[in-house]
Length: 277
Image (cartoon, rainbow, N blue to C red; front, side, top):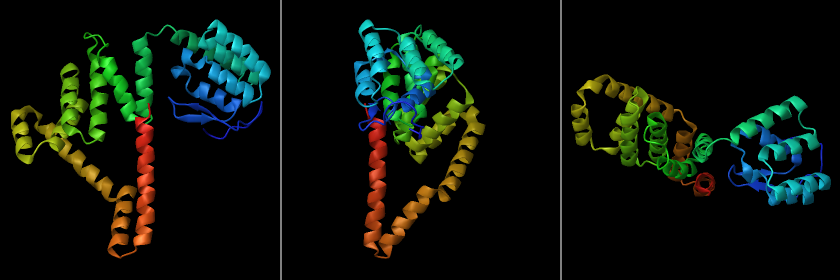
């Protein structure tokens, strides 16, 4: 979390970890900030004994915890729970609190599918693609067949996750499913590009001949690939790879080992973040 001024309670020695968002909170102010920034993702799971215990023992806010503990026993709405936290901490004015309360009450009417779509979109936007993919796979089974645009978006996002993992054949198949449901140009570009990466030169040539009406699109994809190559040449990642190669060639093995191990640690961290349940 960003640094937040501590105005109420204690700074927690043991943070409250939110697994879904992969965030650790250290104060009641950070909790309020989290609620405000992610109001559209909050659901009844927020109303939990674990959170109340953290507020009591780590933040030292006994009176607030006593009140919230009653909410947990009575299974009150997330709107009432969050509004009470806001009111007791004084982080936001009454107008803001009413607005948040209204949003949360409106969200309570969302269907399970709509809530899961919001979660998947959030994970995708945060770069936690594999977690988003697991939700997309489930949602495909429940999105009505008449919702062509909704199903097309799911297939497109699933395809993009596969493409980022270099699984271009699976990506091409899913882009094609998306294109059949919602035949727009962006999806066609993605479908062509995935096939360009997945197929041999001979097979890709056959693919182009099978789709003569897409000549302009094939040219556009070639331009996009050329632009991507140009960006790679000046990218930080390429500079890092080039530097590692130079260190190894010059026999600077200690520096090479330090930098490569640092890179591996970061890649492991990124992978863990993407695959966390």
